[in-house]
Length: 165
Image (cartoon, rainbow, N blue to C red; front, top):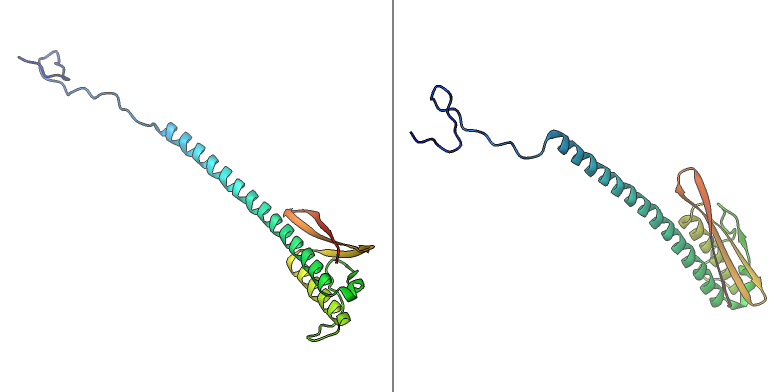
């Protein structure tokens, strides 16, 4: 009698069930380790994205400070006759105190510029303060604001630029 491949005979001459080869594939432990490694990788990506968002917001605030400083420089250049009126200090949380006007003199325009500029600073930068100083014909604009990227630690950032009207 011819024996079939993969089967074996019992002692009594009857055929036994075919042999099942060793099972191949993942065990439960291997799957759990893979899930653990994958979840740690995803948590790392989430932390990386969170840091990128914080740093992006800090860069946004620095860009706003730069734009505001150059905005004031342009305003001073446009109103050279009253450039002395632009020498001011604006404390944190305050705006320049003057009334706005739609058609005003050069002096009124300087006041109007400072009101608009100080409102923009307070609106765009948290806890911002600003100072405009002059040394001879060189004006210096300094803007400081609170960069609170990390909860509980308020870092004061500063942007400073100088220009000639």
